[in-house]
Amino acid sequence: MTEPTAPAPARAIPLAVVGAEAPSSPQPGVKQVAGDKIARSPVQFADAPVLRKPSWIRVRIPSNGAVAALKSKLRANRLVTVCEEASCPNIHECFGHGTATFMILGEVCTRRCSFCDVAHGRPKPPDPSEPFSLASTVADMGLKYVVVTSVDRDDLRDGGAQHFVDCIAAIRARAPATRIEILTPDFRGKGRMERALEILAQNPPDVFNHNVETVPDLYRNVRPGADYQWSLTLLQKFKAQHPGIPTKSGIMLGLGETMEQVQGTLRDLRAHDVDMVTIGQYLQPSPHHHPVLRYWTPEEYKALEVYGMGLGFSHVASGPLVRSSYHADRQAMEAGVAA
Image 1: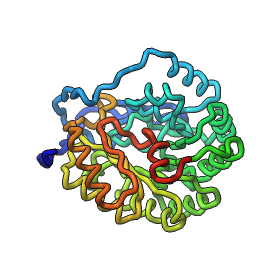
Image 2 (image 1 turned 90 degrees about the vertical axis):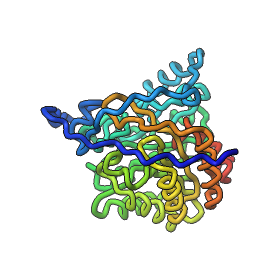
Image 3 (image 1 turned 90 degrees about the horizontal axis):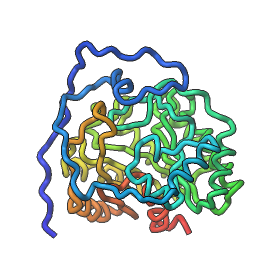
Image 4 (image 1 turned 180 degrees about the horizontal axis):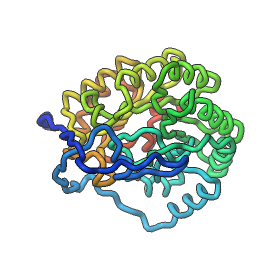
């Protein structure tokens, strides 16, 4: 295979939005999406050419009714999946197999990341019945492996850590054979990381996942409100507390990063004791979100998989449609977690 050449450096150009009115502060639970969400983000972007999706990024939609059936079951239990809220391209495949990544702590996030389709606003208080509803659904579906994630909850002193632990405990009580992966926010804030790690130690998951999302040079445009080193530290501290539990992270491509920057991020993750990594193509949720600046080729994803395995990751899932929780059960199985 010919070694792919590194892409030329590219970047989204910050652009002040002249005359744009930011929406007023919403009531708890009210969703701000697309333009309303991004309007108050500290960085806006100049128009970029709309790139034609290559053949390898297109998704075949199955004709069976599995998706509608599973959505009905989720609504009956008042549950939310990140598959739906984040407009994941793999939703039909995963729902068709009867699997899903559950999103707890509501549908409204306290952050305004420019890549994310999850709504922004003032969240409602955590639902105390959610852990039981989640556990009942997991048991009813007969899931052997489940991923539990959440919106950012900067309004909570523990960032939602106790709610994660309550969900883990409830699932293990109702479905003791189910392996549990949690995909957490960064728990950023004074004393919040320490508090969250202390709480998670009460009932830790089988896999701990936190995404760095992109290379550090792009954080200002992509992840305002987050901090690259903070995320690395969270992953490393959890691993130090629980050396036998695999840690995992994920990054997106197509936001303006170079091959050298991605390789540097992979080296940083290994240096902070991360075991598994996912690498996938960013897809723009709406014209108001960060533009797609390039579609990386399957050959480049393969090169990154080879590079990552050479660094010592136990598993590298690298491909255009790979997402953090896509085939998470297979990844965990290869890492020796799921039976």
